[in-house]
Amino acid sequence: MKDYEHPFFRPLWRRVAVVAVCVIWAGIELASGTPFWGIIALGFAAYAVWQFFYLYKPVEESKAAPDRPKTGEAKADAEPKE
Image 1 (cartoon, rainbow, N blue to C red):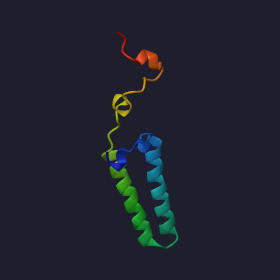
Image 2 (image 1 turned 120 degrees about the vertical axis):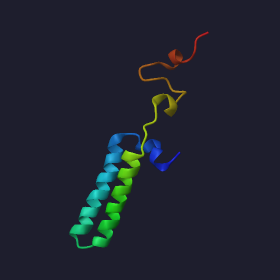
Image 3 (image 1 turned 45 degrees about the horizontal axis):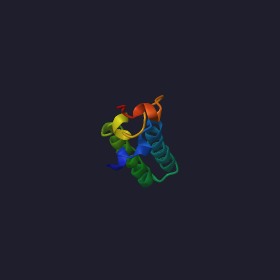
Image 4 (image 1 turned 90 degrees about the horizontal axis):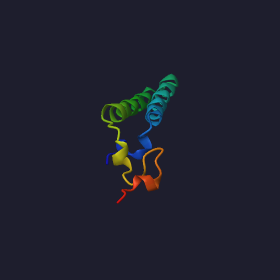
């Protein structure tokens, strides 16, 4: 498993938030007169976009948790009946 495939990053809002924080950080650094750190933060943002939006492949529900019942399904209903 790659870091960008970690379960923490499954919700889209978390991936967007990481990129937004990096861009905001870069803006603050550039506005405060430290372009070196601003460019570093923009690099982080670009890398996050690459990892979280270009390379990211959502995990199917069945692969994510094969032993869990699907939404709205009780555990007893999910087990095979003989």
